Image 1 (cartoon, helix red, strand yellow):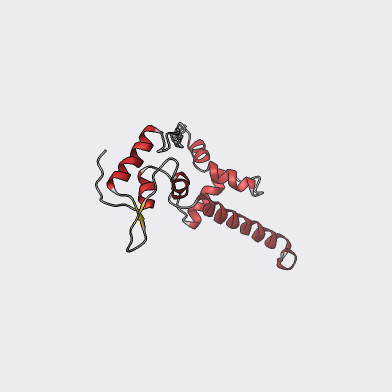
Image 2 (spheres, rainbow, N blue to C red):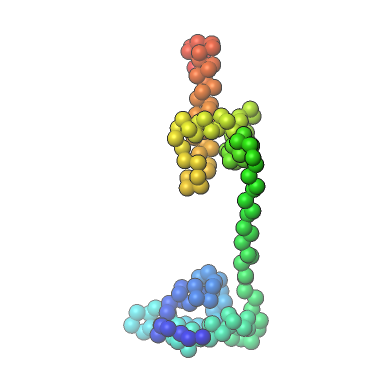
Length: 163
């Protein structure tokens, strides 16, 4: 372990050992050593020797008080497996727009289909990739389809009754 800086802040030290600032402050005095305070600026900092001590605590899971310290280890990210592509175009549209169709059905549009969603996306020229917030896309498609429903009602029953 080689320390590169002559002094680092408490926040940098917390980041270096992989802890949040608040958790690091909780462990100062029991697991980690207290920082040194600069007399001129009154800011706490860690010297190279204290940095080494902190890194050793993290490496060995043993605090400066001699008691064991258990650190949180984040879980391995599960990488989702891409669904197999089907041969038919209708099936591929269905799987491509599944999240939109499911979202629209949960909002009360029970009879919505992938073909309708595709038509609205083409009509509104909404992006189909993951670069846009999915919730915004679902909302826009929902409002567009609901607007079409009201337009059909106005045509069928006249504008005064549908309003």
